[in-house]
Amino acid sequence: MSASPSLPRTYRIKPGRMTALYVAAGLGLPAALIPLHTEEFVPGWVKWLVTSAVLGFVGWIAYAARNLSTTADRQGIHVRGFFRRRRIAWADVQDIRAVPNPSAAMGQGQPRVISYAYGRGGRRVQLHYLDDHHVHVEREIEALRAVWQRLRGEDWTEDAAAARRIDRRSARESALLTALSWSMFSVLGFTVLFVVLLLTDHVFLGPEWILVGPVLVFPAVWLGASLRGDRDGAGGGGQSAR
Image 1 (tube, rainbow, N blue to C red):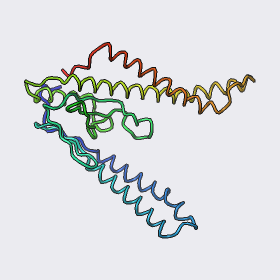
Image 2 (image 1 turned 45 degrees about the vertical axis):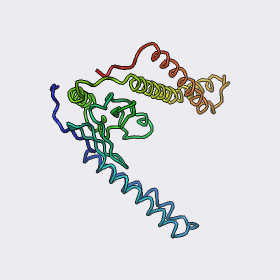
Image 3 (image 1 turned 60 degrees about the vertical axis):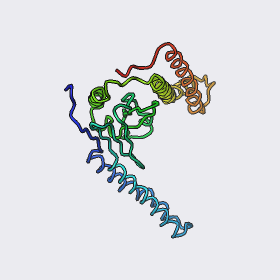
Image 4 (image 1 turned 90 degrees about the horizontal axis):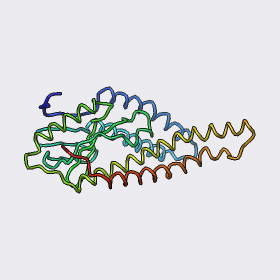
């Protein structure tokens, strides 16, 4: 890619995704509210109060989604969030990373990769719409890092404490994602095991283990991954911000 990426770079929601949001709301809200309005024992004022609150909330979400944005210019990174704007000057940036989205497995349509800028002390700010649903994440992160390295100033130095904090958080989130993955896959494993035992008349595990097993797998894997991450972190320093 170019050694001097163009500025400003702005990331917003794609028009097609706003359309999909409107369609989903238009189809989903009536289905969700019909049971409330057909219930005879609920007072009419309660029905309309709940309906107004739901419509207002969904409208606010749609408005906010359309106005969220991330912009990188010569001064730094500007993020317009749900409630406020955040700005990180290039000299204050400690790192810019793309990471797996922890909520990707909890709902369809979620991006699998999201991005953060890390400021003073390792505090992070999510870069809205710099995700794999809207851009080529690796290319854009590379572009922003190139801009950062060019504009942060010759006297910029890495904050070692911030780097350690960033790496510790990354290790914790990696352990959490690993535990979630193992827990979800173990549902299939316990289901297959139960069926096999049932067919061979060797049922020493009841069907409740299809639910209990994954609950036990999660903390075991999370603890193991966390201890391994702590050991690896103790053996080496933080990631270089180059």
